[in-house]
Length: 338
Image 1 (cartoon, rainbow, N blue to C red):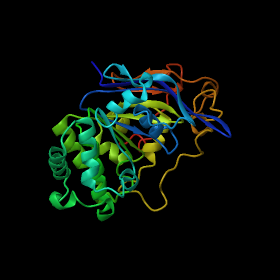
Image 2: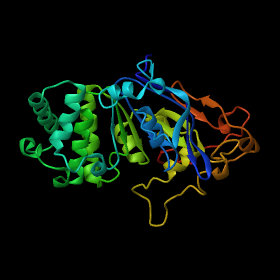
Image 3: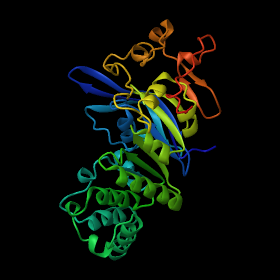
């Protein structure tokens, strides 16, 4: 099947006073037209760096794409000149950032910020572009768009600002939408509204979405496939049902076990022991080995290959090797219920 986006063997480093931080180390994933892929993991696992590299938004220096390919409709974005990227960024691929207040220009009306992209990428006249801006504000659920289009970001609530950011991102009908923690700064009720809005808009526009999050509740609500990221690597990937109910990697078990459940009692939340590794000197073997309760000698010395457990699920873990001892994942961690 053809993919609208493919990331192949992507390596990204940052030069710091402490040395070269290998933030992303050999990431591979793909995205089909109209689907939603969630990339999940702890803070510092490389999720946002990976997503920004697709848009070529990694500041250079100190960051750089060391090697790898980002194929959009077969075209390698890594090799494009900045001027060529500007024709893709915002029109073919758009991004919703985590904090809408820093995404929007406080000195410009929200209407002008939507119009800007339409005039640049769609070659619309100002009158036509403003009419389209009104339609977009209405589409994302902004009440009284005729009034709101002339207002400034500070005159909107947090949830409404995020809706405006989505309108800006969707203005040019992008084929791929990257949402980097789009609901983190919002309360639970508004989170649900924003996620429902994104799902509705995806159905209407057939846009492929990559959503970056550490909230597994968000994943369950919106995604079809999940890539679990740890220490700059994708360590497991599969459908939502596979990741929630049949996870293969101990790190995924830990993430799922740490989710609060309705019957969780006070003081019973589970945490993954330890901290992620220092990526100035990444571990020789599996990055999760120092924190893994099932660690074996081979885990410390050698990086595991991806093992296929179904047509859509892969995990990089030595426990998936046929020679490894058989370990049943903790029932709660596997997302099931007795």
